[in-house]
Amino acid sequence: MKKNFPAMTSGSSWLYGLLVAAGYLALALIHWRHSWAPLSQGYAFPDLGASPKSNLLLECGQTISLFFLFALYLLALINWERRGFSVREIIAMGVLPGLFSFSALPANSTDILAYTALGRIASVHGANPYLHTYSEFADSFSPFVEWDITMPYGPVTLLVFIVAGWVSVYGVLGAVFTLKLIWLATHCANCFLIYRILQSRRSDTALDPAFGLFLYGLSPLALLELVANGHNDGLLIFFGLSAVYALQRRRHGVALWLALLSALVKLPGVFILASVAVYLMWRREWRGLKLGLLGCALSLLILKVTLFPTAESLLSMANTGSHTQNSLHHLLIGAVLEIGGRLGMAIQYEKIYLLDRRLFSTLFIGFCLWRWSRLRSLSGLTRELAYIFLALLIGHAAWFFPWYVVWLLPFAALTDSARLRWAIIVFSYTALALYAFPDFIVTEAPGHRMWATLRIAVAHIPPLVLMVRAFRSDTERDRGESKDEASGGDLMKPGL
Image 1 (cartoon, rainbow, N blue to C red):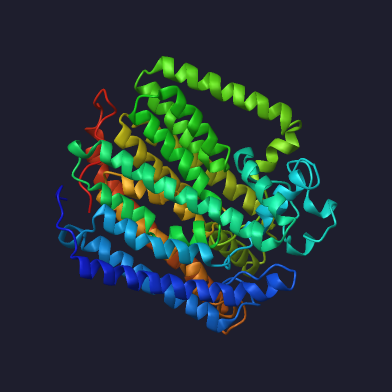
Image 2 (spheres, rainbow, N blue to C red):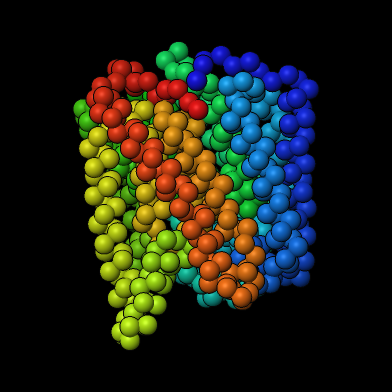
């Protein structure tokens, strides 16, 4: 990709921005129509696109809106070399989509209500959410709570949840929009970090920083899941990007500690922590590694004393359970059970699930060790993390939801592999197939099992094929990346 792109004309950029804004306005109206009535009546809304209680017309309207937004998004990415936007234009055209996404009520998931409930356990009831569930506290917020588990997130998120818990005393909408405002600010901070990381290496890379800013900042999946539905994954991304930014500035100890914070948002952040540690070892940055490990050890000791007094409280973050949902493993285990039934074999689900977890966990760990053994440069760090998270979501995860794919979007903006970038972009689109098939089609309609299988296959198979294709094409180049510049290396190389 060339370094300098002719920007779109002012008129065409304004037209594009208005079309995108119209799509998000339609999405916001659909979400309000779906979620407001239940919330106003004092109970949780059903998941739009994943509940028999959802309105079929609203489900179809959401699918059309998302298809429209992704079509505009892909059109801009494909034509970036010829008609790229400037940073100023991207910021201008992102204002209305950001505001409309912020103004939308969550609709596809009630996770934001669970965040508030977890915050209320600590702030209102003065209990440890890693030791107590909300069913132990009967109050006016109980009808909004669908989870009866201890807190599955890290202590970094608890600080934010406590704020929402305090605000929820005055009303559920206040808590919802308090969280959404924090997530919107986090999304903007992530956009800033991506731009700064790319800009600081612009002299060594052919990838326009504006391109990375657009790819992540105006991704329909990111705005839908992080801002509209209010998921907390933006915090994991923030600390992961902060760690990369610190590495770029040779703040190695700080980078390792920031990577720990990403793991203390959600457990998958441990792969960022491990990757940063491996990078420092390969680079022989022993002083930074020692300081970082000391900071991590002190932080974990404080958390052990304050929040995790028992092994059970610590395991709460693992969110263990023997169930599958929306994953290829759901299809695999289902197929084994069905074949066994037809052959008259008494196969127990728990045994098949345990065998599946042992086999694929072993394969995944081996894959991670292999990729870490090839990690030498900062550009390699972002690329290997992309492959590890792709393998985690497609090949290992027993349950899967569309907002998990948002973890990959920063790596799509930062990676030096064009094919890997497109695998992630396509995944951010196909994952929304989980919302596109109305619940009736996959649960009750004639041939519903076929449609349910197709739904999962559409979400996972295309990005899997593209990942393998990218992996094969990148292998030869990876072998030549054994060295990097003392300043941190060429973080990015040619884009699309």
